[in-house]
Image 1 (cartoon, rainbow, N blue to C red):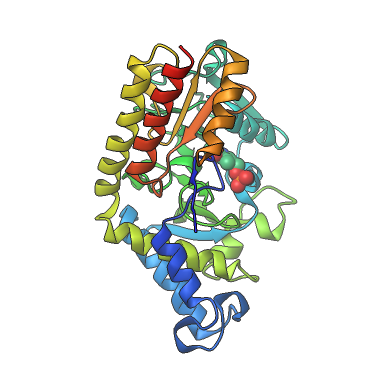
Image 2: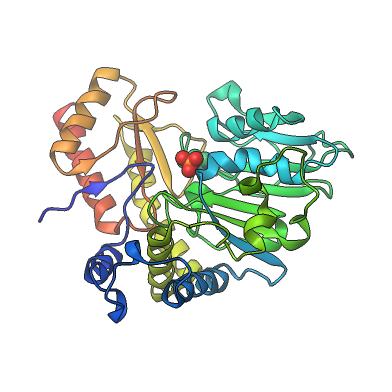
Length: 360
Ligand SMILES: *Cc1c(COP(=O)(O)O)cnc(C)c1O
């Protein structure tokens, strides 16, 4: 068996230990005689799985009791609509444009009201995070929205915006559980799990309980009203049982690594290897302003399209797959989520060094 180092932005690598545990449990989950895939979501055994997953993520992220944790479907994209549908009272919100995901969320919200662009880094291909200390937030805005780690452009907020007392809503899809965050600073913090937490099919939405109400936009579908799932502990309809179970295993794996402080240290150490290499390289160049660099997504270029393509092809042959950058940045992107081992990045850097010498 030869496993590759998968640098995909998502779906992405999962810890090998977790995959082995899934394999071991596949035919007979803990003596139940069934796979979790086959199990009734109303069974006691699944109820234990989802309750334990919730308890573990609460523990990992230090989520206070006045926040609900919802395991939903439909990806981050579905929350682009659910957020305005649940939070619009004045039908107006502010969005910070740091790239495609933030912008897609803003466009979706503008179908239901006024979604104002408060700041943007489009002028430099989203290679930095705009100044968020004094944004033109007005009193009638229901919330301020950010995409905290920009998967495509490889930027991350150093500091949260000054929301001038308004609710903060954050998409953390590509940095979920990669470092500690202070949940109390947010009204809603959410993400699809397929970047850093588990198999595609679950979106985890952490939302302050007072924001979960029946007072939603007229016409909001039952499934998009947070209260529907909050009232039923995410079991209103059939949930993606197996995917939630795998997320639960990842939570336990993270606890075993020492929790989010420890994983952050590991991620910093890992990202530094790649950024240090880029900073001294004469061929490869990082595309992000250093102070806004993401720990998770690292875009880089050679400046020559043909050479980029050659690198991506030769890297894949050597077992480093999915390094092609997003079309809007070009070049390469290495996504180095929690499950990417340090050796994966070390070996990639060795490969880049060799490629640089061969193509000097
Ligand atoms: C991948 C991604 C999305 C889209 O997620 P889906 O689950 O495919 O809808 C949204 N936001 C960010 C930051 C992402 O990385």
